[in-house]
Image 1 (cartoon, rainbow, N blue to C red):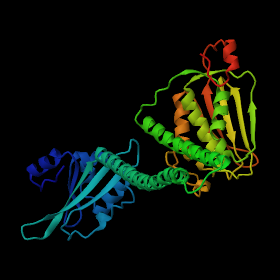
Image 2: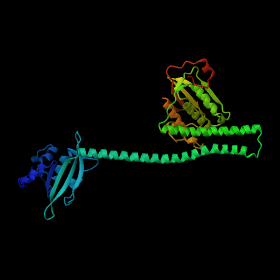
Image 3: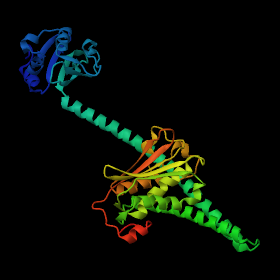
Image 4: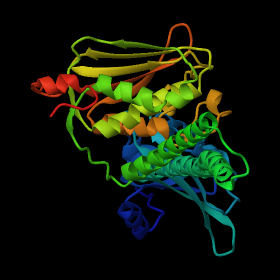
Length: 397
């Protein structure tokens, strides 16, 4: 609505706007208002004409509140400022709507300010979109920061892996080279006992080298998705016995307490893969616990699973390491003084999961840590022949 002194076209123009619109004169009195602005405050256009700017501000404040600490102080600004001012308000009632208040000075041909035009436009959808974009940007930045941190960590792990693998491969090779070169040189005549001891050392270092290479190959196959299992009936107790026998050279007269549950069922699995997993668990226990401390190894059944539990009395793990210890390349804080690749436990978990089982670490009362490898029991158990009972080292057919 416009007063009679205003041209008719002016009123038609205000009504055509899709926003609430008001015009104040140079004396800060409301001289024109469209129905959208009047409806916003529950009035008719006739009731609003003649209001002063402060009165309109107070009336509007009953319906709208500042958005995000934005205070509509533009109502009290000097109108000599010809630049537009913009603020955002939100309705006090539900459903919440957000409006943009824009004030623009009306300048005459001589450059003087003749009044101002105010519009209130519903920008609820726009603000919601802006907020979604902002959340997406923040999430993207967090992801980028996280990935950058992971890349730095991977690079660090790669350098450590290169150094550790180099050390793990070079050490047994150097020992093998020195032993064999000494024998071939012929400078010293070895008596049978010394020769046997030297060749035994070569065998031990060769086994050690073979285990390291096997771990690297196993991890490579897992990453390539090429870790198919050659399933057969497997006696897990026999796997543990074979693993201990293969590590005889590093046991150093260590006391190993074995506890096998009677009448253990067989599992359907890959004997060689399970041997790698159990051997890695045992080797870790030997390497990362004091030489004089014992080891406890048990094989039992629980909830349809055969469980191998390897418990040491070493330094144990920090509370935040019980999951991280299975991350590729990660090495426990207490283990970093000993060379290693950080691949053994991830390989063990990969083998366990390939069998439909699990591998986890748990705190051991009295110190140390226990690793539990759990593999599901197979279906109908095999019927053993007498020959099978006489050959515990071979899995049943």
